[in-house]
Image 1 (cartoon, rainbow, N blue to C red):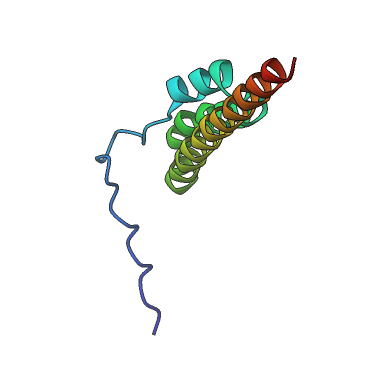
Image 2 (image 1 turned 120 degrees about the vertical axis):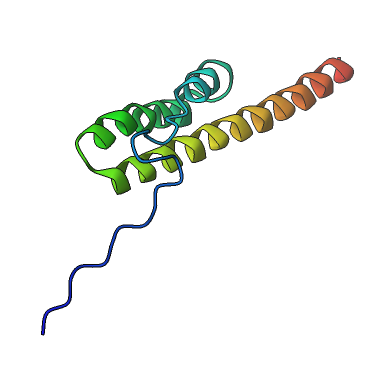
Length: 96
């Protein structure tokens, strides 16, 4: 006896609306923080709506999560590099 396929999990963003693409955050972190990680975030953010429209809802959710993750990585790396730069600048100015 064959069982019907399991229903897909419910969409927390509503039936017709795609998940957030996080594109503004991706662009901001690319410009202000860390270019390589920000570009990765932009790439994932750009995939969200097209995957959703193609019917790949799981892929759109994954792309949304990846865009958010890479935007956070970019912001954290930007802060770390800024702090290191600050301490190097202070150390070099006090040694002269």
